[in-house]
Amino acid sequence: MHDHDLTGKTAIVTGGAGGTGVAICLALARCGADIVIAQRSKTGVDALTERIEELGSQAAYVETDLANDEDIVALVEATNERFGGPNIVVNNAVDPSKEPAATMSREYIDRTLAVNLVAPFRLAQEAYPHMLESGYGRIVYIGAIQAHSPWKGSATYAMAKAGLEGLVRSLTLEWADTNEADITANTLHVGEYRKGFERDESKPLEEQYGHVPPEEDADALTLVGRWGRTRDIANAVAFLASPASAFITGQSINCDGGRLISRKPAPQSHL
Image (tube, rainbow, N blue to C red):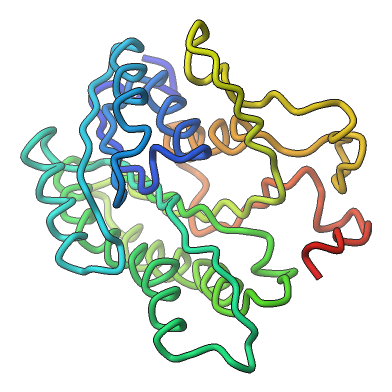
């Protein structure tokens, strides 16, 4: 067994059938994990499930509204009934909507924080007993560099992503102090990236992403000379979900191609 092998492990991926979620689910499936796709809509689930099964893993869909605590509890229960409990939780789903800070309603604040911060905490709480029982746990939060460099209109989004940093430190402080289980939690702050989706059913699903025109990459604000791809995020998640990452916990890792230190001005659309 190599140190990226996830055979026998089960991963919950929220927002799993969206562009980034698809890449994450397939990266984990290629490592041998079974996948539970958790999201409100079933859009894209069938094609993703088929591809996961082609890779030799199993997949299940659980309709989940992350703003509803009962759905979070039911998600973990359904995962346990189908696969025996989650070993890996990837919090990928997000509410990225924007509202000016001066006029943001309490209802809007509560909803966006519920999805972007509270739900990731609650899902970790529900999954933790199963991780402890199995002796293995990996919690990966998909953060954003907006936690450190926010956009106008995204106060609650930036607040939630910054909050994930404190959350992983707290969880690892409490949950790593045991000899009974190998449990880690980390946040992966992603920068701007392009999904580059190109529907071509003659190709495997993962090969339909990442087709970004050279002229678009030429305007990239990163230090690596291109925009990120969903596979960049997925590969980092697969590593953090694997035994290979056992010595990394409580960390906030930037997966942004050097965007935060590039000093290039942000596009006008984000100002």
